[in-house]
Image (cartoon, rainbow, N blue to C red):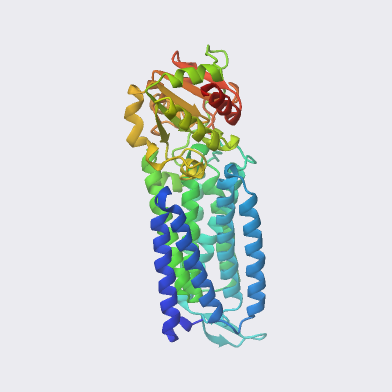
Amino acid sequence: MHDVAVNPWVALAYLVAGVCFILALRGLSSPATSQRGNRFGMIGMTIAVVTTLVTHLNVGIWEIVVAIGIGAAIGLVTARRIAMTDMPQLVAAFHSLVGLAAVLVGVAAYLNPEAFGIADLMIPMIGDPVAIIRPVSRIELGLGVAIGAITFSGSVIAFLKLNGNMGGKPILLPGRHVINLAVLAAIVGLVAYFVTDQSPAIFWTITVLSFVIGFLLIVPIGGADMPVVVSMLNSYSGWAAAAMGFTLHNSAMIITGALVGSSGAILSYIMCRAMNRSFLSVIAGGFGAVADSGGGAAKEQRPWKRGSAEDAAFLMSQAEQVIIVPGYGMAVAQAQHALREMGDKLKEHGVRVKYAIHPVAGRMPGHMNVLLAEANVPYDEVFELEDINGEFAQTDVAFVIGANDVTNPAAKTDKTSPIYGMPVLDVEKAKTVLFIKRSMGGVGYAGVDNDVFYMDNTMMLLADAKKMVEEIVKSLD
């Protein structure tokens, strides 16, 4: 386990892998360089894995190779079959596996510390001798297992919410803040006590309580905050890997985990600022969430106007500028390619086309950017909320395709709304709003009706998003 300290070539290989990971994060910061970033990440991981295998040829290399092969096959098949609409669930599932792996490594190290090189001496007992784990290794074990367990159970809840197995509304337990603080304090206290007493009761209590707090922290967080949860769990998985890296004396794991953990934390903080949410409140388990006020049902009795594909095509072809606002409904319908074709047709008519992206549109950070990039939408036509929100008042048509919560003005006016305080795209200020939605009976992921549906300048286009856009393209021809 100490090959890095002995062999300088191993240290150099891990250093190169770390540089590749840094370049990967740099590349993933922009859709234009994301493919290059992914390549750097794959190269870095290949170097790290191969180096680890070469330096541990005496520990069942074929079993490891077979396990890697099985995992690679599962990952390849899953990645090829998964739809873009299910990508957030896939990310949450992968986070849970990282957390579970950290827990299993910690359990293995606790049960057999000599094999991991973290035991100082053996204390003879009546039965088998007991290995005494070094105090610093106990801290690493306790933290690694705790963070890994929180990541696992929290990611499972996030997966169930994203997959529709649980409702998107916050589940507010009575006295949840007191319970959460008590459980977290117990975990911290037990990890500190574990340094002086490595008894199984302490270790397994830390593990169980950590699984419980992961559940308690994510359950109260509603659908509107789910993209923050995904990035936050990504951060947790990184810190869990870093903690296990110390246990395994593997600098590559430490570097990789620290990069993932810090970048995930920074992304979560940036998204919280973009949503006008308190970072500490979100990670504390939906501290800002309020009980359901009963206003989530759609108000179908209010008057609204319905339009057709021909109406939409005519209005947009006569416009000077159209701002397209994609949302999760576009992802569900897989309408991004048809939408790009519609944009191209409008440009042929002399219309200026722009795309407005809300930072939490979809179910994970960058969800809409990925979809538009997949459809080869030019990067210079895609704008973030703060860069384009001021243009809606001078825009002829705002074309909203499956975006509900991120265009809901209730976030600015209704203090009882679960999305209150979240910056939204001001689509209602456009001269005309074309809003694609399956039906008037549904509400957004946060469970809130949208007043834009009923405004005088709004025309509702009720249909599957892809079919409606394809009909608009035909009408533009």
